[in-house]
Length: 294
Image (cartoon, rainbow, N blue to C red; front, side, top):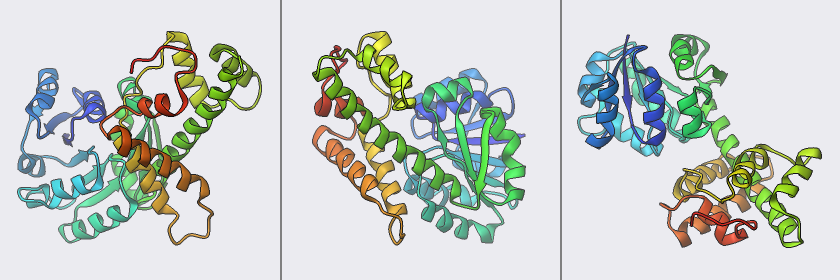
């Protein structure tokens, strides 16, 4: 099977590597230096036009839905050559409303669009443990499930078009809100004389522990340093703002998502969107009695 992959950032490259050797993989990125390592592993460098002409399935993994639109509909974009019956599988953390806009434009071309964003970071991508939530029809999911399970065995069809992105945005909102709450609680415990390690052990014995305390903070404690997350403040702000937009027009209260989005947006604005998300933790809560990587 000929498969295309567009977007070879840290996450995209890690995902694409899992497809090398399992399919005939054709890759595209605006940066040649991002393409070369995949070619060295056995992938083929390609233009967007080549991908459309050659591939049955094309994955996109880009910073924003606007980038996906540009890749598809911009000058020299994929839609110039995509064949009827082919699939675009979007792994971007993007907007559910954009999914419907994209799908409507692809429908006259008889091209399927499926949203399949991922959670679990670069470590999860490399280890094949990403959580992939998929939006699309049952039939469309059946067509792409096998490929997705090459990437990870944690694949779930969560509903119709856009539902994959809804679930991913909810996940990222909860991670960010949980991280802020954990930082606040642990920071006050440390200030009151409890070491980070003792605090984490007590939380693990009770009911206040979470993936954030047992994953992120446990790693800080074991390594003895508050280290980078590998995720920028700009992307965190984008994700939480998209999550906030889910509540617009809804009857569901949105106090927590509003506050979370505001805190992260302020940090991105004040510190710089290119900074690692840990910068916001250090600025707001300190380093929990540990040194930091800055």
